[in-house]
Image 1 (cartoon, rainbow, N blue to C red):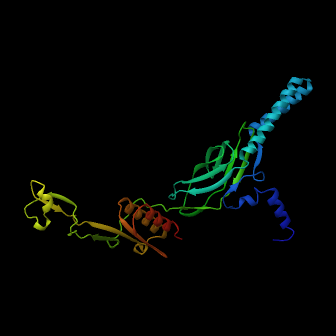
Image 2: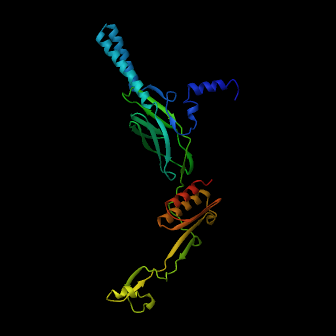
Image 3: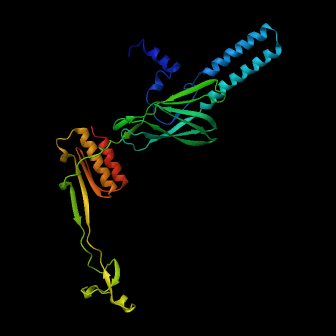
Length: 317
């Protein structure tokens, strides 16, 4: 940066932070103070100011002390409302921010936690095209949830947040900008329909029957049952012979999903198909693995494993 330009930038960051420094991402927590809060008359406030000027002119013209006193009282009330609108934001702190899981094309829910040492009323939060109204309790914190529209998968920055209020009389609008240095990971959209995984990707493993002393239940003796399965001790207290009923062998299908099995499919279409297969395996409570270039997730199941696999797909270049 040129030497003559640096003082100008420093002056701009000091006097116009909304146009320079506060447009850059910043780490949390962020506290609002007098250099971050801006205030202007609202449309109603501008009209009320014109009314006060008209009343002032009439009171002076007709030397009406009562009208002059009323005009002054209304002017003081409007000035006090400007101070209260400023104090409604001053000292408010954004302490944390969390984003929920979301699929591309669906809104992602951002949860912002605000803290304060005093109660605050009629606060508004704007993010992109979404808006939310909230209030702060005294000496506490509040979590505010707002939905942000998404269009594509992958890492996306959290948009600039506008916190504003017109409390208490609506004559002045006070606002401040916050730009958290955080990102949210958006999952890929699964294809609506398509072919199932290849037979080579579905591996069926069968468990062996348990032939030891462990058994699943007791049942009545049937002709042809082996004598070694008869529960002699239990039968002694029963009118008929009882037989140990062992667990039957069952098959368990494992889904081995592999990026390389989708040769010839377009890049994003591969990701969408794998996302659909992951959803189907999760819905059927199957164990599944996922192989991706430079990333391999072993066999597992459950919501956490599903989230890890979807995160890996979302981070694909």
